[in-house]
Length: 283
Image (cartoon, rainbow, N blue to C red; front, top):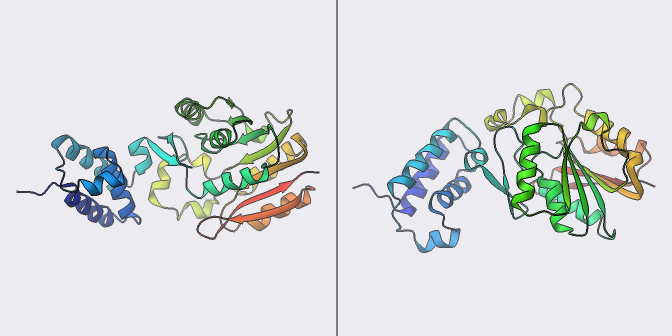
């Protein structure tokens, strides 16, 4: 008789994910088991002999079939955790990544002494950055700008899901300078920054994500240049700008800010010790 205990199913799931070429197979196996059982990690350990029923087994097979095709686990589950909160995700929206949490941490440090900060999140996507800032700084007012309908709908859904009262999600084209006429204490953005060449060597899962949210085209610095150009004068005196940057782009983006007259220009590494955040202050 086949052993369908949680412990056995977890080990089988881990091995199958590994055979698919999935790097973080142990972590994903735990996430999947939590999803199909509704157990947290502690409850899984306490119930390792719990037998997976037919419905749960069918759900597991559905997930593994999609993962074998390298369809993102986040899309399969329909949600993902970011900064300790749940955000809905799916086709057409960029998946929130743990490296981006460092961008949020940095932004919170930058506006630590500013009371009632007005924040602008450009290229907002699912809303993970802007909505998290709104929740972490309940005294803030956050405007999230997104060009495309699908991610904008996810941002609105995530706003409701997390009961965010001090943020608004609006449609606009960042490159055209929409919403640059107001004044802000912080402008933050995780724009498209992956080069055409780097797109060719990314993980297979990335091909399912919206390419326009990842690659800006021939010039991977395009969005940084245009945001600095269009929004520099939208910052209050002493206002901050904070960018997520791609691997190897930190120095170039710092130079763009310095050339534009920003001071206290700096860079911060992500958890993998890669330059991930670039920031500066306007006079």
